[in-house]
Image 1: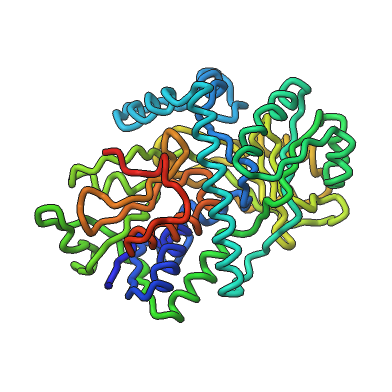
Image 2: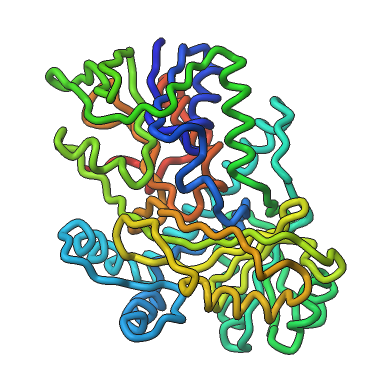
Length: 415
C-alpha cells in the first residue's frame, strides 16, 4: 500500500520505519529542511517510563493559578484570547483529580514500558547511535513531604510493571555522585533502573537515513496546506508544491495536527505546552551527572549526552510561539548551577524552546479517523521520545488490521 506520513518529527519517522517493515511504500512530507526540527530537536532526552505520572494532577491547578503572578512555577498558565486554549484548559482541569490522575498515570506507564521495548528492538535492528545512556534514571525530591508522597505514588508505577527503588539521601548520592554538591538539598529519590536516555534528534536523523535506504521518500521543505476529501475518504494532500495522492495517510504533525483536520470535522484535544532547553558543554566529568534525572519540585530535567549536558524545564500553556529571551532561562540556570556548578559551561549555552503537543490526559491519539484512509498518530506531549516507537508499532498494526500488542485504552479518537 502507498502511504503518506505527514510530519518528520520523531513520531512521523518512527511511523515510517514501522510501515516500511510491513512492506508499504512510504512518503514523508515535512515543511522543515530536515527531520526532527520541531519538538524533537532539543527535548529532555529521557526515555522514562518511571516518570509517567500524569501532569493533570490535583497539584496542577494551584501551580497554574500561582503562575499568574509568580515565575517559578513548574506549570505556567499565560491566558490568551483563544477559545482553543480555554477549551483545552477546561478539559485539562477536568482531569486534575486523584482518580483521573491514577488512571492516566497507569495507562501512560504501561504504554511507556511497551514503547521502550519497541525502541530496544529498533536499535537492535538498525544499529542507530544517538548518545544512548543506560543504568537508570534518578527522580529526586527536596522536601520530606514531597518525597514521602512520591514513594506512595510510585505504587501506581510498580503496579504497571516498572522497576522502582526508593532511595534515601545517602543512597541517592551513592547512586549518582554527580548530585553530591546538592546532597543537603535532597530528601530522597525514586530510582528507575530500566529507564534510559539519548538524543531524540540524533535518533530521528539516523532512523530517517535507514528509512531512506529502505525506500522511503522524504519531501523536505514542503508544507502541508490541506487535505482533500470525497465522502469519508481522503483523496489528496495539498502542499505548496502541488497535490499528492496515496492509498492511506498518517497525521503526525504535532501541535499543528488539529488545525489541518478541523475543517474535516475532526476535533483533536491537542494544545501546545511550551518547554525550554539548554545544552551545555561538559567541562568536568568528575562533577557531571552519570545518569539523567529530574529535580521533581522544579520539573528540571537533566541528561548527559556524550560530551554535552541537556537541561530542560517548564510547562508553559501560552500559545504557539517558540520565541524566548535569555531571561526565560534564569530560574532553570539558578537551579542547575546549584546542582552542577563547575560541571559544564553555563556561560555559553545553546538555548531552545519547543512546543509539546499535549492532550488533557497526557495520552496520545493513535487510531483511525472518521475518514477510512486517514490515520492519527499525534498528541504525545512531553513523553514523545519515550512513546514514539511503541506508538509507531501500534499505528502500523492498525493499518495492517492486526490487534496491537497492548491495549489502547485512552488512545482512541473520541471526536
